[in-house]
Image (cartoon, rainbow, N blue to C red; front, side, top):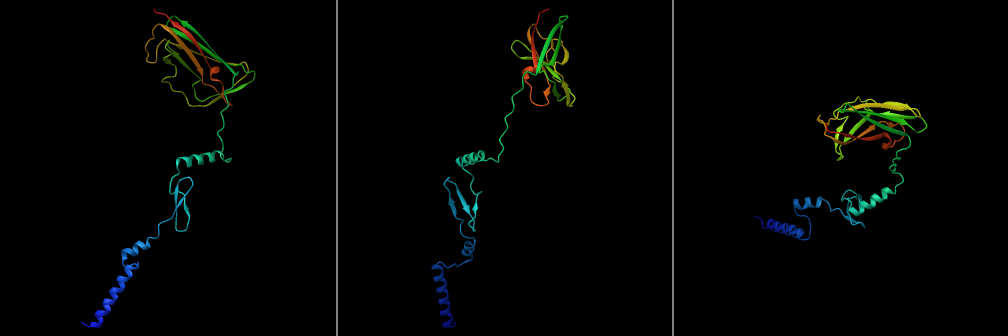
Length: 224
């Protein structure tokens, strides 16, 4: 082997070794590390959140979720924003429009007749709406205020909206019978019962008082 070639190879090895010791990339692994780019800088904020910036110095607002305090402040700013519509308060029910009256009568000791009316007492015509074929309901409670009978239970009604104009002083009259049986078809025992009727009508414009759309009566059933 030529002595000159050996010397040149030794010199080349020495140069490569010197380059590694001085921080110069010496291999493909180190080249891949350097090509991955520098770590993105982290910007600290007064609210305690850390947010990343990309290579173009743009702030990544989605890097870290807002803290509870920061979210609270954001919500407060949203409430102060005049462009966000506020929820409208619902108008209170209108009173002095209707009167519901219930009359009861025992029939042969085994039935109770119910006759009830809805009267327009407002002094002006009122437009009312029924959202289905059901115009009323009947609930009966025992002395412990537990429901023993509900007229509409298990019933189906036509789904049709109807509108009516109830002139001043006009009445809607309804009638039903209770056969003294509970929701399971069993005869109720003797005692005191409260019968409540409710009219399902609604005002076309506004809301009527629920108290004016219902009435109740107390009946006593005697032992045979």
